[in-house]
Image (cartoon, rainbow, N blue to C red; front, side, top):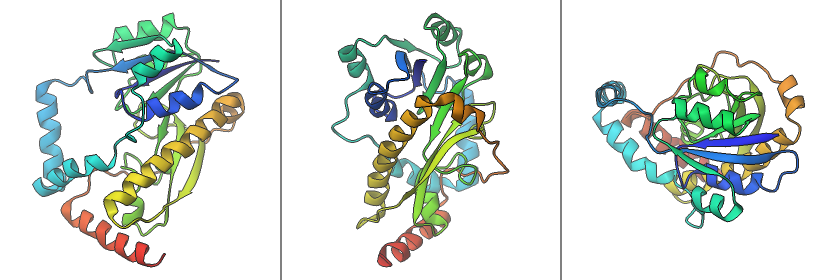
Length: 257
């Protein structure tokens, strides 16, 4: 099968997964489309979304969310995806907006069977309907329990000792597509919350890379056994009150190790 990766970061999980996909036998990565224009929103829409988030989680929650971003970074040794493409002679393309005619044209020209979304926001139907077998996405949490959720922290918030990942079809609603494969992953607790998130986030990358290879290795089977999601729970950046609960739960769970 001809696979095209669509990503919005040069140093994100797409780089890590591409290295693993190159070892697969039942699929070939025919191209990588990198979106360097973010979500493609207008300045007005960006400001509106920011104020909505601040109204929901508070100013301190928003500031704390910025601080937590450093927990969700790639391992230092990772090679940027454009470098991997150059090394492996994989066509690499840059678009200014993911939901654009340019993206659609590239997917068609590459004769894409399956599109893989890694590290993107919303993808419109005019894009995800182009590949013959649609688009799939890796969400680094279990669905439908953790829709839109940042990895690990919300599992800890709920007193769980495990996290996980879900490979699902992309549809018109973020993180609500049919589930093809998912796996629960035990959380390794470290000395601090930030270190715990960072370690387990990379652990999820490793596990989901293996899971993606399994899905692509027998895609028709997983597609035929895909299951619709039931009503899920949606999350966003935690408010300060929620964050303090995450810290308390982390202490309880880590001390019980």
